[in-house]
Image (cartoon, rainbow, N blue to C red; front, side):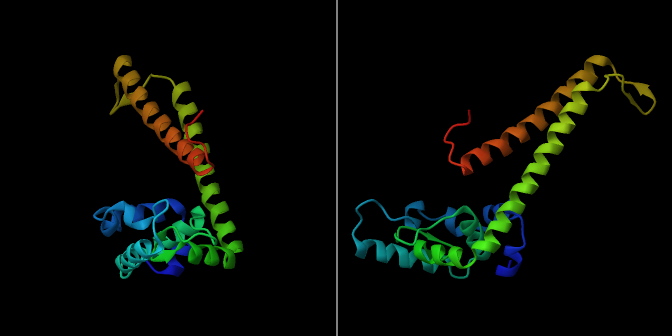
Length: 178
């Protein structure tokens, strides 16, 4: 995925791309990407250089960078992390330079998520108010079986709703969903 493609991709696809392709990250000690509290500058410099080296040539680097920018990772005043081969101050500078584009991308991501939530809630409402008189290939489905199938479907739909809402809450700083 190129940087241009990543910029035009919705968050869910970016995250799936990173999750599927970031083997180097998952096979590496997670502490390499973040500076420890009170860590001496020379030790962090060595680990940061190694982290940047690992990111070089990563097949999902562009998607990782776009996610970092949309998530607001990195601060201009602190060199305490590496993401997509960029330090915190570098990410902050890019985010500042691309603020308008990133704000539009975040809004579009949320709109997509909001539409999905709306559709899922509507589907749950339709399902729970539907009749259990069902037929398959002209034969009536026993009410108990129809009820069980309906319960499974409603359970799957509500699980997805909870998943989306929990992710949204986490992004806005809620540690535990209310």
